[in-house]
Length: 301
Length: 271
Image 1 (cartoon, rainbow over the protein chains, first blue to last red):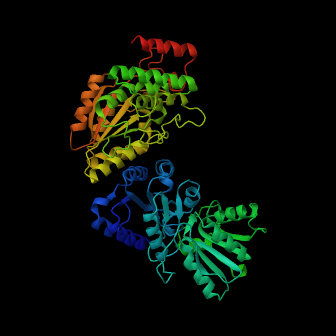
Image 2 (tube, rainbow over the protein chains, first blue to last red):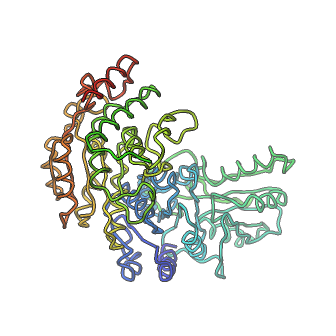
Image 3 (cartoon, chains in turn cyan, green):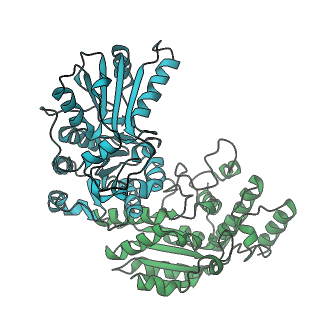
């Protein structure tokens, strides 16, 4: 996903001369294509994320479309107040990119597990929060963010994620991507859970609808309303804490639709997410997902 | 329409309006506003390339006040320089006013909202970097308090600026030696500040932050020196200009009573 991101950013930067990339001394064997082609619009600011976010705000004030790039919690939690106040309060054209969403850096431990940042970021006004599901979505989100004037967050996986979407996609703000729509039980997936969901359904010969949510905020309310009306059960799945995450966003939206009278029955929604707990053992991404209970059960369908 | 003030009179008027705002709103932070008044008066009268009728001119110099709690001083300066009508200041801290008790970027002439400390210097580095990359001539000036140098983010920026030879960046430290709950020496001593900043590869000037002539010539020197970022340590007095407020911790938070307000204005009028 990070390769898809940097390749797409490099492509976009060929025609969009406002693109500027700041990195926090991370991105070895990732960011080089951009750095080599656009040295005037690239800078490694060092291991100083608060400063990086502030510098991004300053560059954006002068018209640049600034991407800041680092691992998981570093360009997000570490500089949360700069994101809120310098970037989002001033509504500046800065894109925060975190590589290693969820347990992608499994064995590196809790410091490198980005499992709360969506919850924190989705409360901030003006900020678009995205978590692409595969390299194609990562490309589409990168294009979207480069065209959108205003702050965005992009949660990437790592490298080597398989492609789910066989075709190039284009995304409008808040768009939900339908993959299967004909069955009563629907799985709503965000971020890099998508491949797992698609494989689980296929390998177990399950009849289920699947939707990918590359945006956690905003979510296309009209499309969501149609989906909630159509499906008898919804399962949300995410590699993030259950509190304030993607499932929470769906619950809140469903509740608003119900209390507004747009639906007359509250939908059955099961959330699959990380419980209120840390894990202090080494493990692959897959191992940690299972330990945290981020898995579908055949009995869910 | 706008009066043009000699720097000395501009400083006096800024002090009067700052006091009036703080008094009317029963607000805090008059001490730190008064300590930086002379710096603002010199900058806005003699140094900054700015046009009040075109506050977003791309070629303007950028001035960022990091100690946003001292906003009354900046609001008064901008009004007196003609960025907006002076009457607007009477809405300070009133319901619905854009004149918040911390700087607000929705006000003409204000580059950045600041209230949380340690934010404006990293942003100033971004501005200075943008000017470098665009080969633009304008300068970025950033004024920080001494207390806010406790913030690590400032030191990230202080490391960054010389690394990238941001000689279009001029930092000013309003070194009034008093922070929120005590003196700087008692809380987190910055001494020796000049040597620290020199060791961080900045060109450092240490001046009397109330001497207009010295401030002006130092700003001119700093502006014109190439090769590295510049910092002016302005030794100031908290509450400067009002004898009973000078160098008193009390006036970081306290708002003047009616009698104190009248006494302060009288004192300014005879200066």
